[in-house]
Structures are given as structure tokens and as C-alpha cells.
Picture 1: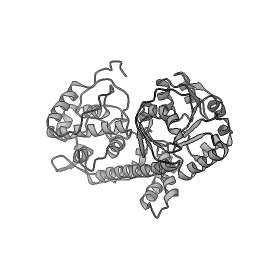
Picture 2: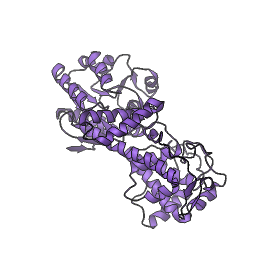
Picture 3: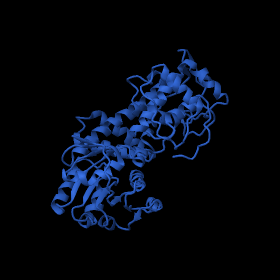
Picture 4: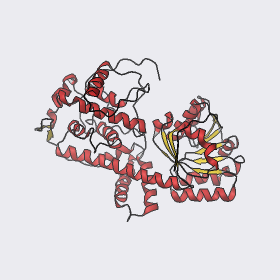
Length: 432
């Protein structure tokens, strides 16, 4: 395995076939860095938006690839890739000695079939199997993990593109190797998501409040950044898609096809439950919609920070009045979000001594954003005075592992903390 992180000075012309959520983010990233990009998509909406940023729209995929040195496919599934590249004559339209980077997740068998077809029909073309780990925002900001496999001669030709799109590229061997690893990683992701969903439902059923659950797991070995980030989305009822449930189900089906249910019985069980959710119309929302369909039952008491059970309606809700797409899960449960005495809610619900634990949770969420598992709701170019003061106090306590990214955008974990503490953010200052 070879890992690369070095930027390359060249800017080859790229054809981007498939301008959906991921593809459009990747195209925008390359355009920002000065790559000439030819874009084709089955529907024109995203293409039109990209042309406003400098992309060249192509009416046919054959036109896009004929004008490009590197071809990137980011299409929905194996059938779509085969239809576009093999059925529509696109493979034959590639330039001599071009490189084709197949970057969607289409499974091992389909990838190996494509590699064989390229070797048979266009041996001069270098086929690179390069699925990515990450979602919408990492694609837009060049923070993907690129899992690459293919011929050695392709490394140099795609270095610049991969360096633009990813914070790391792992070269793993012959084509098909990267797709194998991607299925393993996505199965692991499914375990994390289903665990978060069922733990959230169990906590609700047993009367353990989200604030108490968060304080218990923050900073400990149980608190993976993946689970915490998605748990926050589940609690808030925010299912805006970073990575949709239907595509996660597709990846589980690919893993089952490659392994068999006898190897991965839990993958099969998760896939069956998620398939029911997709059939009920929950496929397009985020993978955190796995929380749906888990009936926690009636909850009459909530475990407070002092260990005493109290009626659920008496537990103070955290944060000022705000949209349901933010932190708390009361919207999902049919309650009104927020509380008029939000400035006192943190002390009432957790006690002031619990604030360092909440800051640790905020840092976990920041970690998740950095590695591409979660995304900030919007770029905001400030941090509140209160948060900075709490960070200094928290760091001095020796409880934190690292400081936030400081990358010019507001860390989403600290946005959550700011809401928990009831502090309102100042206006944005116009930076990026």
C-alpha cells in the first residue's frame, strides 16, 4: 500500500460524468483550483449551476471525454456506469492514453468487469478503481479519503486530481482492491449508524435523556466520531442528506453479494431493516434516518444528571428557540423545540460542572467534520467570546485531546456548545 498526500502542480483537463451530490462537489472543488472541467449529467440542473463557476457543459458523455485527459465517473450504480461508458460508446471516445478514474461505489464484480472491458477494448487507457470515503462537504473542500487501485502507470496521471479532491490517497494494488476495502468500510459505517439509532431508541425508552447519554460517552472509548455526529442528527430530527439511506443500503447489498450472509449476518439484518425504511419512502434522507422505525414506546420518566428520575415534561430543554434542524430531538418526538428560559437550562439539566463534558462532545463533532463523517450546517466565520473562554478553561483542565481546526470556518461542535449554553452568535464577518 502506498499513501500519497503531495500536491501536483499540473492541471489536466477533467471530464466529470455524474453531477449529483458528490459529483457536483468534486467538480466545484476542481474548478476552484483552476482545473478545466467538462461536465455531463443525465439531468441539466446541476450542470447549469456548475457552468456559472466555469465548467463547460457537454450534451453527451462522448463529447466530455473526447475533450479531456482524465475522466472521472461518479454515477449512482454499476448499471449506470456500464450504460454510459460501454453502452453509449464513451469508452471508445476517450483520447489515446487517457486515464479513467471510476470513483463511485459499484462493487467488486462490476469493477473487475469494467477493468477487463477496458483492457480488451482500449488497452491504451488506464483504468483506476478509486471509490471515496466521505460525503458532500468533504468532496467540496478536498477532504475525501481516496481508495485507489490500478496500474502503476496511472499514478502520475491522476496525482493532481486526487490531490485536489482528497486529503489522502491510498494506492492498494490492482483494480478491484480499492472496491473491496470500500465495502468493508461501508459495512463498518452501517454498524456505527445502526448502533447509534438503537442506542438512542433504547435511551429514550429507559428514560435516559440525550444530555445524560452525551455526557456519559463523551471522551470515552464508546464515543466514535461517526456515532456521535449521526446521533446528534437523529436527536435533532435533521435528516438532510450528507449520504442518503438508499445509497447506504445499496452498499450493504454489494457487501452481501461479495461476502454472503453466512459471513456477515448482522449486515444482512441491518440491510433488511433499512430496506423496509426505503420502501416506506425514507431512502432519500440521510443515513441517520435509520433512527426511524424504532419505536421507543411511551416514556414517563427521564434520568437526570443527579441520577433521579423525573417526569419527562419537567426536564429542561437546552438552547434558545431555533429551527428543528439544529440540536435537540424534541421535534422528532412531537414536542416544541427550545425553552424560553434557555439561559438557565444547562444548569438546570446538567449542572455547571458538566460543561467540560459538553465541550468534549463539541470537539468530537469537530473531529467528525474534519474526517468527512459530518458536516457543518453552514460556513460561519466566527467563534463566540464565550466559547473561546470555555475552550481556554477546558484546555487548562487537561481533559481535551486537541484544539479545534481553526480553518476559518466555525467548528460545528462549538456551534452546538454555543446553543447548549444559550449564547447567540454575532453576525458573520464575510470570510470563507
